[in-house]
Length: 591
Image 1 (cartoon, rainbow, N blue to C red):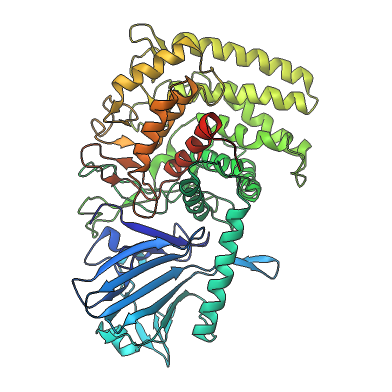
Image 2: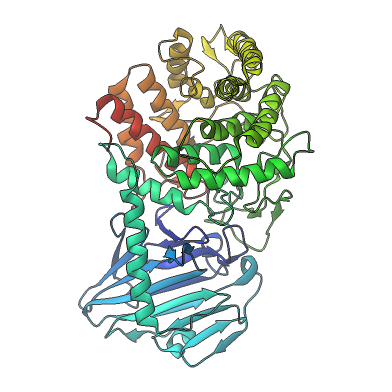
């Protein structure tokens, strides 16, 4: 089985991973960062899963989404016996002027042909598989620790004993957390299915998409939406933990938190698609943290989805890990790092509010006070050593990427100051932005290699510098930028995929490419006018999406396997943003 053969379902409250054989191998209740209920992805034997599979070991399956939705279908063909589908979703739709998004998974077994024999196995393991729940049987349900309930039209005995039974009609299985379902199963499922399907189709209809690569952009955007925690507005980097960057690397991290940097890129992609609600909710989340941590000298690079500050990293030694890759980690010590680029990214998040007349729910005068603090932090931390975008744990330095976002924070800040009538402040910030830019141009340039470098005074390549053009620091005709792009193609590109860097870090030398860096390289090629090569590389990276069109964080150029946490918002953003850039150059128009 390929590394990342999973579809995802969710409703902006929970996310579950479903493999190509209709087994839910990862789900955390009651929210993204809660302890797992199913964790087979991290331990085949003891992790726990919820599977619906044919008894016939030779049965084949295909998996796909209903068009323009997050409703997942796994279709089985059992030779000589028949066919059936498992249709999975987590309800999300408008109800009573709010979004209905219960902590629940809805599953339907739809008989298509014949009478195949199937096995249903619901085996939750609480708290990262450290606790077997107490099982109780009701008249038509099974409860686990009286916290999770499986209501079903199938035989309870067959489920508990994992016995095969003949499928002679449709069946419904609804797994709920907390509040049990007290309603007819069939009618509830079918009603919620229709309303959920309508919700996702309408959401897609409201999206502004390119005229090319439409299916790819729609699927990526639907997955991005699932990573937005609607209760607070936080956006997680990915819904999994401890999927390693490469086999045996021990680079196994928990990504179920909100990095300001990742969230900025995700928010911008959704904003470009025309989804302003996500922007407003994330800005509210961001504003709460700025106010709550205003007394701190340095903001954290990441927070919990409800603004939690302490995200202590713990290793779970009892789990075997993804494909045997230990350790399994929960929490992320990167919250203790200093990553000063985040101030520039927060400026970029807030700046559009001062220019967009559609956004009327803000007190702009008060918001500008918070905004000023962020811009002043960009000035204060310019040239300060930090852990950088790639989170070098033991080797801080003056990273060029950080300095670029210090510049962009001050530069964009001057534009906002002008817009709000703070003309003297705008003048002061413009002058400072120029000083910062001049120093970056001098100290981040390596004359020997003819490229911008990872750190001031160094000569290592770093793919994050490819964003220089995207953020407006240089344009595509800048000779130093063109030279940098070409040198990076020689140093960082291996078999058409880009590495973050190739110098040694805390864990050795990187062994796999980083998908967002490949997209950044393609974007840079577009900016310098190499459109044909850019399209070739874009088509190539798209070919490595899994069977439902999604990407994880990393890709092994040797094997083509996807590695790293999944689905990775950075990678999904790359699909969307690059398609839009290509459309501007080779597409007839945007829709």
